[in-house]
Amino acid sequence: MLPRFATLVAAVGLLIGFSSATASAASGPVTRTLNRSLPELKFNGVTFGDAIDFIRDVSGANIHVNWKALEVAGVTKDAQVNMNIRAISLRKALNMLLSEAGGDTALAWSVDEGVIEVTTKELADEEMIVKIYSIEDLLMEVPQFTNPPDMSLLTTSTSGQAGGSGGRNKGNGNSTPTIFDQPTDKKGDEVKPKGDRAEEIMSLIRDTISPDGWVENGGKASIRYYNGSLIVRAPRSVHEAIGGSID
Image (tube, rainbow, N blue to C red):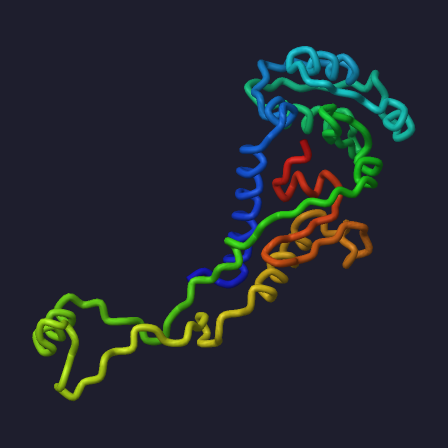
């Protein structure tokens, strides 16, 4: 069996995978555009503004840049970018371009009513979005029985012969074997309640995705468990990291 921490990591991975699959199945046109592969991008000493225009043209995406906010943060249209890449998604291309152009200033993009908006990460993180993620499947814990049933064919055959055509052991002094005992975990304790396992998942998410952004650490984002689901109020960047689509 995996250690409990490794199990939780796997659970969060499943949560992200589940959310991504759900988002993909119900994705809007912008999400499909973001996942579309772009041709070769050769930006050698190209200005940031020209690079945005090129990506907008080849992808057909509606991209709006908040140039005023970027200029206040020290990033202008004339910032030089150098990128030579091919066959990557628009999503990845945008992330690389913003990292290249922003330098020490963190830039971000988000989707709002079909438009990809580029601004500073500080400004983007001011908007809080509420999403609900079902984790019911992650809360199911397969019990480990202290005395597993004996499924030997030999034992079954012997019991059937001793008990006659009914297949039950009658009149030989032996009691019918107990098939199921009290489910326990690896240490012999009873299985943890769903609420406790949900808290472990939430703690891991808070520790691994934007740790400083949660209310427990002085931020604004929050995560709560209710009836098999996580209710997350957080910036778009956090939902993207979890795997939720904001299209």
